[in-house]
Amino acid sequence: MYSLINNGTLIDGTGKPPVKKAAVLIRDNQIVYAGPEKSLKPPETDMKHVDACNGFIMPGFVDAHVHIMVNGFHREDLIYRPLSFYFYNAVENLRQTLNAGVTTVRDAGLADAGVKMAVEKGLIAGPRMQISITPLSITGGHFDLWLNSGFDIKPFYPGYPNSICDGPEGVRKKVREVLRAGAEVIKVMTTGGVMSVSDGPECVQFTPQELKVIVDEARYKDQTRVMAHAHGVHGIKNAVNAGAHSIEHGTYLDDEAIQMMLEKGTYLVPTLVVNKDNKERAQRGEVREWEVEAALKVFDIQKENIAEAYKAGVPIAMGTDCGVIEHGRNLEELNLLCSIGMTPQEALVAGTRTSAECLGWQDKIGTVEMGKLADLIVSKTDPLKDIKSLGNPENIGMVMKGGEVFKYSF
Image 1 (tube, rainbow, N blue to C red):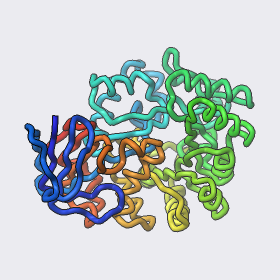
Image 2 (image 1 turned 30 degrees about the vertical axis):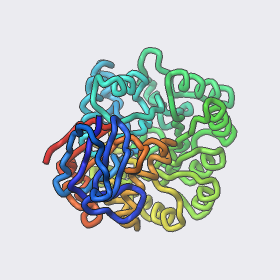
Image 3 (image 1 turned 45 degrees about the vertical axis):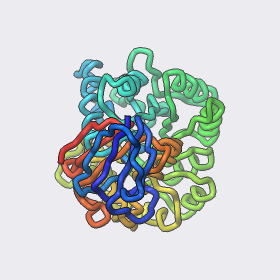
Image 4 (image 1 turned 90 degrees about the vertical axis):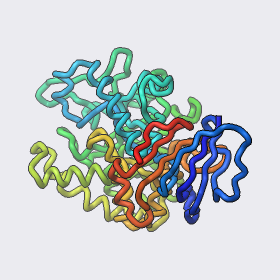
């Protein structure tokens, strides 16, 4: 079955100039033509027509850092909410993400293989998913929820690996357990976090030896990649030296760390929007007392350092940490990428082609080109003139994933 999207301007995610009066022809779930409509020879068969209504046709966006299963990280929720609630809630989170124009996500922790399967089987609507199952944490680290009061909160499902691991053999076993549970990428906490009770963002976690074992074990099994939560510069350098594929957040990057990332080809996923939100909530008095200091200062430090990484040429992918903030706000990150120096076109590429490369799925998604999967959106507004407008899901008029239209609101 053929589908034709026309009557719009094509911004294909490669960084090339826009194509006015463009058309995209789709057969089943794959793009077979993308370019000027006048150059298209339509097939001699029935076609579905999707009118872009003078909008802007783009690849579906790829968010390289989300948490689909959660709506804010509040330990006390785990005490009072039944396990099943999180799965039902994820249905709405996935819908909002897709509705915002994000057709692919890399889940940075807590979505299990069943959630991914439900999307793939069409039981629920949502973006394509690459899952990490659970972040690996040291005892007392950024995902150890045992409090110094002696109370232990266990945020895992039946059959779901606990996050805590220590020592070379401990981390090796944990990587194997997480891969067994269905992880397609390994998430590791190499520093503390902004909103942590027991550690700060500059706190170093995992030894260089432990990190090397994690990366080597992941690579041994189908060349699985490692994504490293890393705010503090020492944790960033440890992760890059060990061979982590991407640095998440990267708040305290310095010149040496930037050079290391360039030499290794390490991706940077800044998640600016969550740190901006944390700062604003702290200014309104809406965060807990142990969160205030880090929340107030991290965003400004991060912006300055991410700008230096961008200038140096570090590959930057779009990630948001949605789940910590509200789902559906994903494309607010694009305007913040422009605030660190990117042009709107560069921000669009970061959120499409570069993010697809970060996931290792660049052969399937990320650009509007022949042979790619038909993951497409249409914006009602011109993102090259008003990149901020994409942050409002109401400006996303059409969302297609795999040739199927999930949203049409012109």
